[in-house]
Length: 100
Image (cartoon, rainbow, N blue to C red; front, side, top):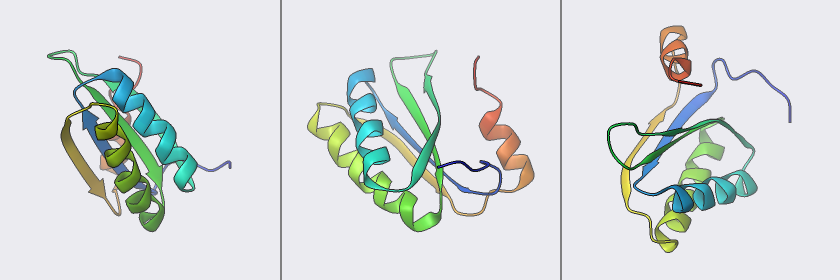
């Protein structure tokens, strides 16, 4: 699957631990036609934020599976968000913390 991230819906899922977050990410990408834009460690406390991209229906399906799997692996869900139609400024903000 090859496409640009710009304009695609954005999902963020946050867990308190790395391993449950990685298991959630793996399950999400196997469930629906989505891409992982980034995986970020929270610098202020233990935690991991997954940023996923895709069409709205695929992201909803992937989020449901990711949350269930992350919790099955002992993770505590600390946040989740879905932006159906990100603006250009939102896209910029989503990418701002990549590689930092």
